[in-house]
Image 1 (cartoon, rainbow, N blue to C red):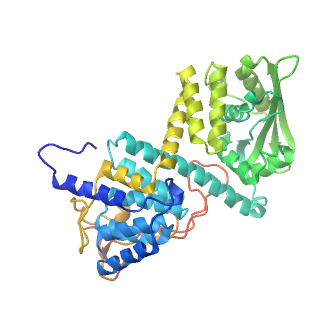
Image 2 (cartoon, rainbow, N blue to C red):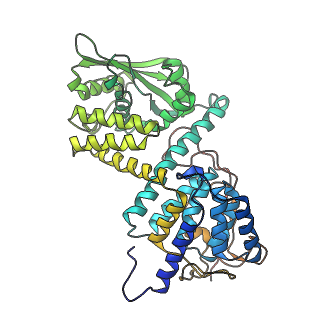
Length: 481
């Protein structure tokens, strides 16, 4: 959104500027969102709490207090203060941005994702800075969700081994490089990504995302140790809910320059169900990989349609150097180096402008890098500047924003619309009272934010692997006016 500057400052612009200045004048963010350490002293926090006790429903006071709580990592308290702000001002984008960051601190990543997604949806034409920041937060959330899911699966391993895996679900381990040329090692990730893509062309198969399995291996510390064998592969498969796991290795050989070997291991008993191999010059890497994939599918007795066979035969790029750069990008991103990942992906896209995956991953890695290095206050100020403040104030202080909420418009319908946040909550329409942050229900739509007990698993709609279990119930009540 472009803010008008002609004919003097309009009231909405003046209040939006106040919101941004207020955010920037506050704390500089906590350890979880980039920037420096918290700068809120105990005396500052006590003063803000005293001020809030005098003006319990003032949105400006509560927003400043929420920022301070966030800076000292008191995320549950920050969430309570933000609830008061959003009751009075459902459209306050700075508060909503802090709400997303607070959910991240609480490890309620599904709720944070809902907040950021809704913030993007509520801005028809967000600025480039706003979109990059929110896209970056979403990219970081994906990594956090996968890490959370991996830890959850490992903690429940004794139960998972007794649960039959999903049939026709396949996970692909990173291929193991056994040669001496370290410049080829990134192909461990690149070849795995190729095999995942090709097997996903088969309609009867369901593929576990490469990143999901890689995060699990990092948590188990198996990949670095080189312990990739049928037994460890089967264990990894069970932890991500796969019935079969593809393992492989590659190296240079005297007779053909480059060789790839792969096998399919049953997760239930670690028995090898199929094998495949191919060798040729390195320039024929894609031909080698396709040969191996077709061999595996044939030995698994999977009959391909002409369309599936044609789709598998497609190449992501015809430039081997571009693919090697792309593989380096995957390697960097897997270790959280978004700067290195962005540079490698960009270099791959420059070598082959038609390499769409490289261009897309370069953009997402750049956004993640920006989000990682941007302090919380700057995130809120940037997003707030893109969308403006919201509804009328709660008394006792300055009012941020000028647009009144629509009748029966609830905080949650504005901040987390059409999403399932973690935890259990019955959401009632509320109006602030004079009793601190307590709210009392009135007639209308639901209003209370989800509780602070974090959801321990990823609730991504397309994730394969450990079965998602919602730890609470959302009851939405809409009354006719």
